[in-house]
Image (cartoon, rainbow, N blue to C red; front, side, top):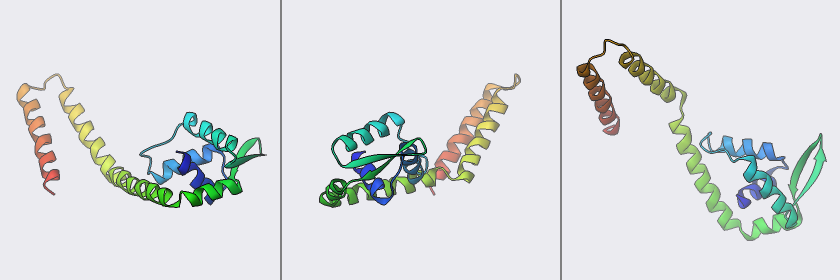
Length: 143
């Protein structure tokens, strides 16, 4: 988290909530760091002299110090590998969260819930629903 925050601050001075949202967006909603992770990290970076905070509109805006930029430069390869993995994870999360895909999941869920919640549903019908879902899973897996 430390290297991620440093790299983001090198790109642009930010306040904690802004960093949380930037990370959430870059990972397509697949991961959102909590305030309990971000703010202690910012405090640690400030205490280590790698970042500094200024007050703007009742918010602490953090930016890198010269030491922070030097630290990033000294760890450039590690930061590069880390951000490559984060970008790959973000693309993966994005594919799994396409609006069309999510709508299809919700449609399937709604159809199953509506059908099995009827009092007249019979065990044979539940078996057919299970078979249909398993067949769909196999068809998707075979794509």
